[in-house]
Length: 193
Image 1 (cartoon, one colour):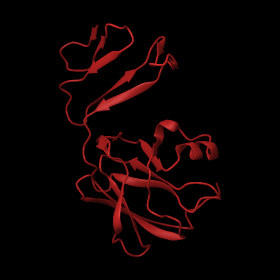
Image 2 (cartoon, helix red, strand yellow; image 1 turned 90 degrees about the horizontal axis):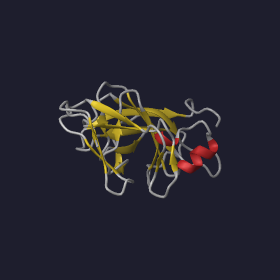
Image 3 (cartoon, helix red, strand yellow; image 1 turned 45 degrees about the horizontal axis):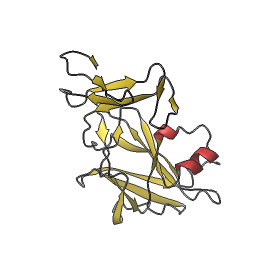
């Protein structure tokens, strides 16, 4: 059993079967986080080794603020057989919880959203300051086409708006439906894959 003491940060308990670890995090304040890193020889449930240095961050997320969750990159109208992706970046200083965040398609000149939008994630997916996440229908396709892409920053999203046009706009709302950003894109953004 490991405990970090009374400061409320993680304590880890090795279960009786010597294969499970239960982590308890208490008394963290909004916008505080801790990082839990694998050290030594650890295996997952099927017995596959987990790389030393693998980490997970734990935090209480906040709703994204207007302007702090931004579109960092978009791939629309990809090469034959490819898939779209929408990459978001946290430009703020708070940890954001993307649960329920929606993306809408808009026109290039009008910021009014079209349709009912697409929920990017229905899970409590955290986005830390300066971190990026790319939402796509096929993370495997992006890894194959962009070998430098980090699997850790790719999120499977079963549907995305149809970005297959030469120009358009993207409207974002938080999990409560509050507008948090709008941007436009056009062929002038596009670079060769």
